[in-house]
Length: 486
Image 1 (cartoon, rainbow, N blue to C red):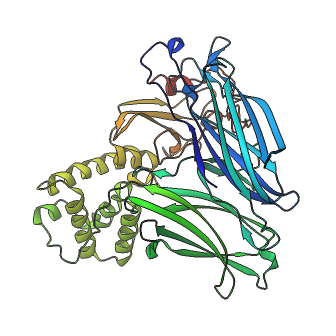
Image 2: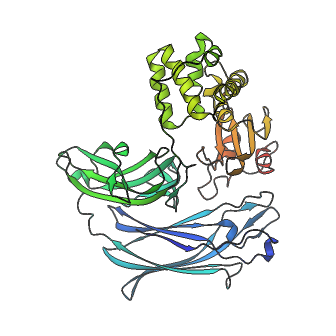
């Protein structure tokens, strides 16, 4: 089903908040799924820009907006079903300068046929000015009496869960990504879809094929084609990550196909997307002439160590090549691979200097972050340090009355991103084995529940809209304050 941008106008924050003339910024997507007990249904996915809504004070410490949502579904001129309700945004702390997007999902069971959705959204804080309308046509297919596939959802955030709520689906909590644009910073495409009635097939297994198709010439990119088999069942949920780091700029179609045991196509579904990326050529190590100065900087017994230390800054495809070279246990090949990596990665005429700078960083993280079962570059803190450099500020709390030992790293700038934060913690309390718990950096682990996980005395689950609903303030629990003050 097609994606619809309902409204995309947003003023830059250049005036006091109360004086801003805003319009709600919202996105809509429609997906079709099937429930054997209830039949086909449409899933209406909405994403709201929190800063574009009218935020009001909640007590003395938080802000929250309230939207009025009207949904009417028509078939021709007949109203089939409708829903109207108030939607509260998450509460945003006054001390926090970040107001994030929030999401809504509504589902309607519908018989096969053509429909029109009429959607109206207004802001309780400013109902006359901050109001938008939209309509979208969609079709419920009559295909669920045989093996079939749902629509594809690209996920912003997806984890196994039994917590329930509107974002729960087949054992996962899934926040949809309502955009079909993937910049170079996004190196993976998380997708979710479902297959139905494969138990009607003659065989005990069913195969699914993933393909990328170049939309400009309809050619299949063979390097991205893969197949995977599953046991047949009434419903099979599928959640997977597709590596797109080396996918060049262009327009593409992700196609998923169900195949029988004779590799005959039974059905398919697809989703278009746009990619913006700069891809450089791969490494060629066979022609490398070893540079004496470069090689003399690497002790004979440390060649494999320093080659493996490149993994934190290497692309996924390069990581595979590094691992393959390490498996050969050929010192000469490892030396050539090391040198070839820096020939490709370094600025002109700075091969040796670039390598020495990085080597010093590797030696530093080995000394500071290594432990008795991990080298420094294998630890989460070491990886982040090597990938992004030294943090602009660092808060270290090795003792806390109610929290595990933790560190909060803040980077003023990482590429095009500003004010990115990383939270590490040590739940084992030994070995300096700090793990990454949460980050707001694109491509890193994002865990909205990090404050409650960090707190040993408060582990009651919240919900996906407010994961820390039950994580009340407690004596000695200052991690939230430290996290939000930068």
